[in-house]
Image (cartoon, rainbow, N blue to C red; front, side, top):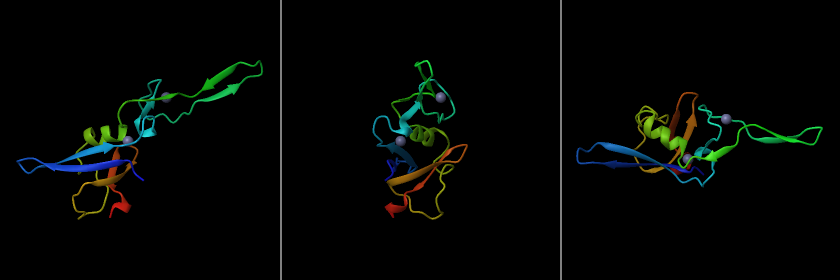
Length: 116
Ligand SMILES: [Zn+2]
Ligand SMILES: [Zn+2]
């Protein structure tokens, strides 16, 4: 089940505005950043190795909760909701759960299948 949603609101100019939300728990991957500060999404998982002399070394970067969801941050700042939309044409605009995907350059979104 997806933990990301889109909600639409109009203002008195009748311009629809998308608001993306994340309900993932603290420490979920979409909320976490590399604690060492890699700018790219770092996929290293810290693992400990015991060496022959008994000392333990940790290889990889620990992740920590960033306080916000990187997917939501991207969807709200990385382009217009239309530019980042990867779903089918003629979908009705509605509030609901979404699926997101990293395409190598950007997070894209579409309505979640099971919401239809
Ligand atoms: Zn890292
Ligand atoms: Zn999230």
